[in-house]
Length: 103
Image (cartoon, rainbow, N blue to C red; front, side, top):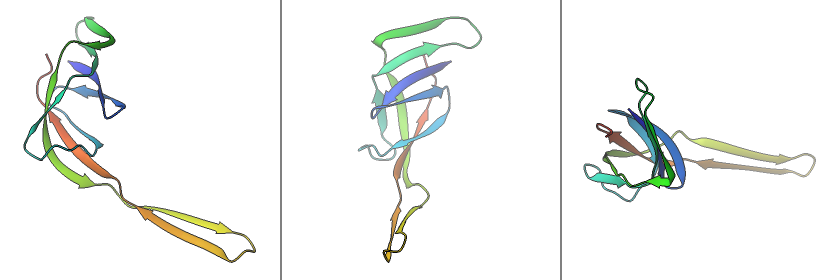
């Protein structure tokens, strides 16, 4: 089974017993997070697919595993012949979600 869900304005394809990394959510690690914006649920073995208009009236439970930071991104700006240089660093914060069975 797989599903396409919307979390924090972005769409993710999830499968049963999988982990995904999403933008930071306000939930604490160890708690469950309920996703009620389910766009599609399908089965790869059967040709059975449910499509929402725009959402299905189903909910999927996910467990919040941890909060983490992504890798550091460096942005370097320079203008020729102007003696202008600027370096900026950024690390995005993520939440790891673990899914059980999708029904």
